[in-house]
Length: 144
Figure (cartoon, rainbow, N blue to C red):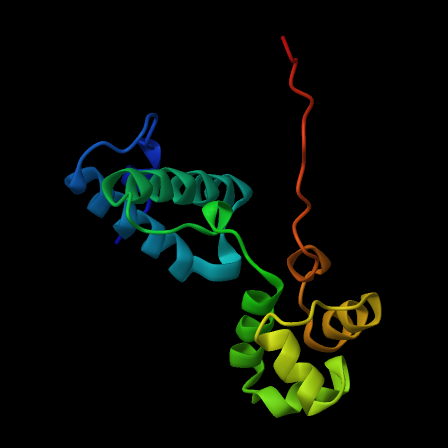
């Protein structure tokens, strides 16, 4: 697909129809094929088009979970890293401790210590915020 004409008429609003969405995908694909030879304007346009396409996908398919709406538990983060690195549960021992301790953490019977969090972050690249338990916040309520 030639980019010239299509880029002269960029999307200036939200994508509202499936036809616009499909046209946007074609343009995005053509931009991606250019790779490192993108101009600065094309790179900016590609980023904007990606946002518009993602917004359309979320609106068209509200049942699809997105990362910014999903609460990640420490065990979820560890399981994701295990899958990414092709590890079995017993191979977490260098990061967590004995097999019994690994089992207790993965079953939710034991929480991660600070040392475990640091080792998991440094060894497997799991973000700190995904390994820390979520804080419970309380707010004062006026009593009448």
